[in-house]
Image 1: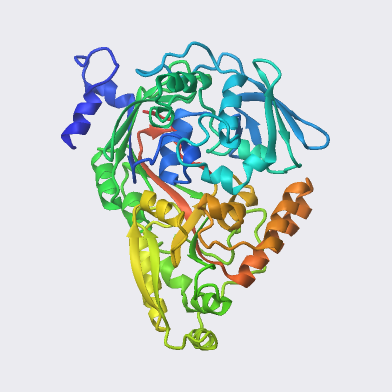
Image 2 (image 1 turned 90 degrees about the vertical axis):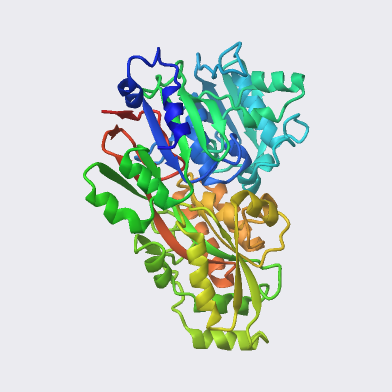
Amino acid sequence: MRSWLHCLLLTTLLSGCDTGNTQLAQQSLLYCAEGAPLTFNPQLVTSSVTLDATAHQLYDRLLDLDLDNLQPIPALASAWQRSPDGLSYRFTLRQNVAFHQTDWFNPGRKLTTEDVLFTFKRLTDPRHPYHDIGGGYPYFGSIGLAGLIKDVRALDDYQVVFELTRPDASFLTYLATDYAVILSAEYGQQLLARGTPEQLDQQPVGTGPFKLSQYRSDEYIRYLRHPDYWQGSPRLEQLVFDITPQSSKRLAKLLTGECDVMAYPSASQLPVIEEDPALRLNQETSMNVALLSLNTEKPPFDDIRVRKAIGLALSRQDILHAVYFDVGSMAEAVLPPVSWGHHPNLLAPIPDLARAQWLLEQAGLAEGFDMELWVSAAAHSFNPDGVKTGQLIQSQLSELGIRVRLVPLEEQVMRSRLAEGDQDAVLTGWDADSPDPDNMLRNLLSCQAIQAGTNTSRWCQPIFEQRLDLALQTPLLAERIAFYRQAQQLVHQEVPVIPLIHSLKLQAYRRQVQDLRLPPFGGVDFHLVHKE
């Protein structure tokens, strides 16, 4: 074990170290994470690494999702009412919900509607003092939250009303996503008075089960239990995220007991995990997809013949076998079969190099062309090895004379460069944090999502956009399904993205760890976890 981590475990709020390390180890959990968070506010990014580290550890939302029936359930809001026209929602807040007390903030009050107004006006009102701090809100930008919420107003300290510009069947789901965390208005006001508003996202304060104690960049995050947590204080005294990018090193630490839980084991590691009696494996069907996204604004990818030729040259079967070790399924459409909006009649093209070559000839590119493919240097739940996937695509497209140069990028660098829109193609994907089809389709392919940076194909199709909007305007499930299928049909026909693989969500842990549940949507949650 690295010396810093050993010392970290010995430095605790428990009364004295002379009682021995047994109690300390029993009340501490080490999570081997695959990367460092980009921020401590999940509203500012769409990074799964950041969501894992922040959303369920530090914060709560007005609503949560029931993991069994995937319906919204009370969280910080204990009850809600929807107006008959669907244009107004009134939420009643829980009372006596405490914010974190930290070295940088001592709360003077409990949660009220002032905090809800502060949070959502920051997201939607350009005049809010925090609106332009942090670099934008990609998830909420891609779903058009600012255009959907007409006003947020408090009736009293514990009742808040959201007024909408139009009915939206997904509105409650938006409030249950990992991005809809509630911040402290009191803390925000103190930081403004000090002239340090950026600390709101760097030194976080929430109402969640854990509070931030220490962060050493790219090494570890140390959380301590929130003793006044409204759902009951966690049984863990401290939670440590050990940042270990390499999957092989995470597995080695899990095997030796240096880590209790391992994020994103690769499929090739599953036999080792399953054969070790000291280890356990969580596998969860997840609504995700790995994609090859082509910049439809940039030649030659603005030519549908080129996009179709690339799709015909790719072997999803080879990618599934070589990268995912057959743990997952080949993607026929953007939405996976587990989604209630999945289109069952779309078929991925069978590799056909002859037809692909003919399409390139028709496009005047018989000799092929040069292109860059940006790939993530980090592992993701939807793609455990972006570089290896990119190498397979590089090899497959070379058969058409398409010369692919791989460009591995750290996630923060990639997001910054994507905002400029000069990419050729990006190996990307999406891991949904709600079961609603809109969550994937709108974030990946809507016109608004171009500016938000999540639509990397930069494809803007008015009919597609209309179908998504119509699906939100009807409360009837059958009609919503029909509209989402029509939207997927358009993507299938115009090929702005090429769906590759739907993966399983994986998590490995030592058998002493109890009550660890891997949710199908969103980040990890350690509130109820304890050790035998």
